[in-house]
Image (cartoon, rainbow, N blue to C red; front, top):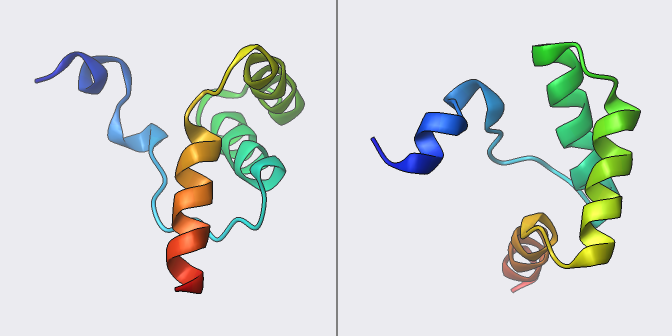
Length: 72
């Protein structure tokens, strides 16, 4: 098992999410953690945006690459 799998169980992974913006990606992550771990979605979303202001989390990069691929 790799290090990421040890801290990121499959229940915390979403695939094929139809999100139209970075904001929607972060909202989906917030909803996931609210449902799975009873953490308020606004807490997750707000902290992801705060972290993104410091430097990319990679979530937006995944969203942009998927969006570009779907347009091609």
